[in-house]
Length: 230
Image (cartoon, rainbow, N blue to C red; front, top):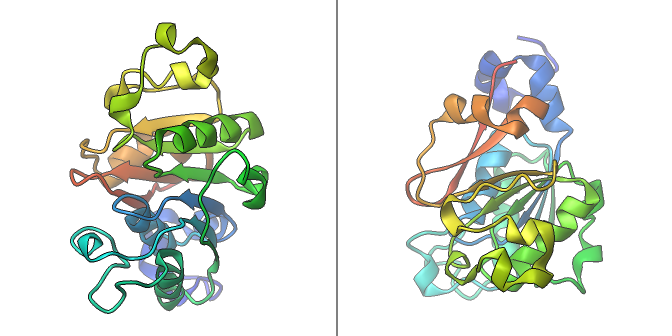
């Protein structure tokens, strides 16, 4: 194995190869929402060698989060979610650049996160309005987007009932099982109760075809970052 490979990822490099691992180290991912989906996604991406990650969430850890959110423990109750998660991610890989924003994503705050400079955006937002705004803004910026349909899915209506929502928003129907390719930037909508297997999911993913990275949902509705061999 090359001496340039981060020792943390030597086993991963056996699967991906050093060149892909180098691409992962230069990849910038923004994760919006670090609850039961986004927190696991962020950790999996860092454990998979992603070198720069931004995490966005306004909330603090609640006792009811402990059963399903990676940063939620009895010790972290009451603490800022993104700050606790940032510390955990840096403990996993101190070389990773982790940016944390304790903010609500909205159309008004969208310019604060550098969406246009990201390689990928993960939408793990619960609020339907903010979720749709993120999808629309990311697509307009030409950024690859993965969106998890969870709490917000029941409120989505057919395009005929929401004509003002535009092409990307209409493409979300019918919720969990919809797959939107209205824009080439909209890589996939991932249903939270669909189980995918590591490399199998990566091989099928448009994102994997681009930079050998994929985010697959597990049966619990969380993301596992997986890498595909070149």
